[in-house]
Image: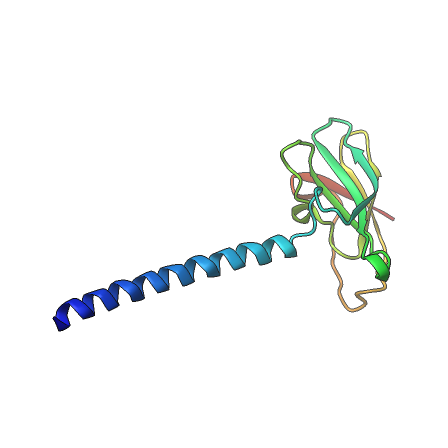
Length: 141
């Protein structure tokens, strides 16, 4: 009789552990959804400007977020593939200290250095003719 009770208790414990793991993974997915706001479907996303590369392979966005009563967030620049199935802006965010100016005729991005007010101690260095997410970038002086 004790053997059957131990088996039943063991099955119940395995079930409880399984349910706990499932709930934990669901919470992780939910948290990831709330943290990944840099997507084109985000309701608070305010696109300020967008431009398709001359070869129509890439597209860049200048955007910010509407934070309700707190106003708007800082401005972000992101470049992603020009594909209807791709809407994740976070993968193409330009590093702080640079902003996108325009495309050149060879479908290369022209970036400009600038000093962000929100991050004074960070220094990123991008070089001319370097590659960023498959796109050649040039720094305007």
